Amino acid sequence: MARAVVYFPEVGSHTVAPRVVAGRSLAVRALVSAFRAGAATIAAPLALRDEAVERALARMPVLAAAILWLDPARPEPPIPKDELWLFVPVSAVVDALSLRALLTPAPPPQGAILSGSAEAGAPVMLASATLVARLWKDAADGRPLGVELARHADEARLEPRAVAGVFAVVKGEAGLARAEDALYERVGTGLDSGIDRLLHRRCSRWITRVLVLTPATPNQVSVLSFLIGCAAIWCFWNATETSAAWGLALYALACIVDHTDGELARLTFQETHFGALLDWVIDNIIHVGVVFGMAVSAGGPVAVAVGIAAVVGVALSAWFARILPHEIEVGEAVGGALKDMGNRDLFYLLLLGFVLFRWTAPHLLLPLAIVVALGSQAYWIGCLNRIRRSRAAGMP
Image (cartoon, rainbow, N blue to C red; front, top):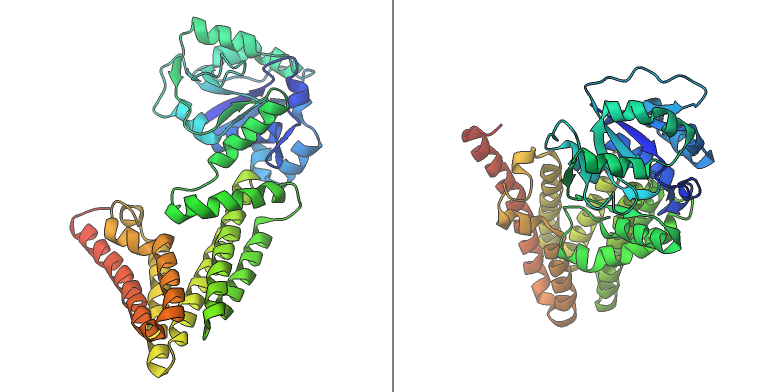
């Protein structure tokens, strides 16, 4: 595994490191990014150890165990000579994705540097243990290393690597704003659908910008999403023309808040397995409740039976989407048709159709419920068939 040095690149970096970007200080972001990039040991100057860093480390004991605080009064520890070290500046927002780009694919023996970082005055680089040993005392003393690292990168002809994620140097208030904007621009996930990018993320980012300034936790936001979703379910249950429209609006709001909990977790490093499970359970309770409410609104025992079938299909589809191995997850391996059936865009079309039919053609509500039931069953059956075909073809 790699090792890392978190350092002050310029004279004014000591005052920049405690500045907060999207709810966490630059110092905390540098330490977390290095750790999540794969650094087993993170050497950091003792001057970086302020109250905000201590609070963050108390919440992340695994990270705390990986940090080696550089005390100028202590001698330099033995440094393995055959390793490359990451140099991570505290005056820049650089995410783990960009740091991993320096490590993969395997860099040349002399190391690599993030393109544009030296010119920006905050080199992000992978360099030899010899350089680490030479600069160890200066790093421990908290001296600025940016110029020396840039000179080394030029002389050693380090291989430039493109920025894969976020890299933004912070200089002044404008720099803070740009760094924060860069983080929010990449706060989405690869699972976002068209409506997520067009509507949900645009709205959720504004809520997240407020929440990072508060003690609110992602799980609390998830519970709020659940309560709003329950209100949407109630509106869809035996819906009138008015309540159907309110149900659609409340469902959209629940989705926006649902996106906010993940954004808050990622930006403030509060991701947990429990939080991810809670979010998944809440999402699917809301979807199941909305689908059943739509069916019941058609009226009669047949509609209830169709609703039960739809609920079973939606639940099984959600379960398969969660447990599928990577080679058959919704996406390229499953096929475009299944991907389209499983995303939120189609669900919105169904909800919009329900609202329009409730207003103009109530007799079409039952056929719509049947379409939902058949579609949800087809989704999980299609996934199961894809699993069998993949295994028959010898895929792992």
